[in-house]
Image 1: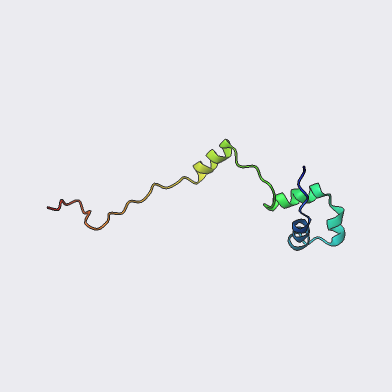
Image 2: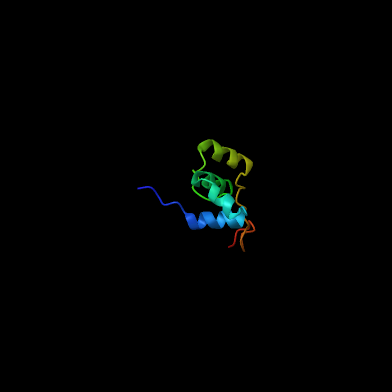
Length: 79
């Protein structure tokens, strides 16, 4: 069974975000409106693929963890 089209979210997006007039909004097909919503980051998105993840990890590498010595770890042996 196909999901229902999210009309409440679509109308809120069309009128508030895109600032469409009612005539402009109702002239769009659901597919056109869904494409516009995806362009604004709303809707279903596929997860990034391996290549995308590798590019992101190269552009934004994790920094190595900083290790800060705790009290009493100045390298001296206690006895």
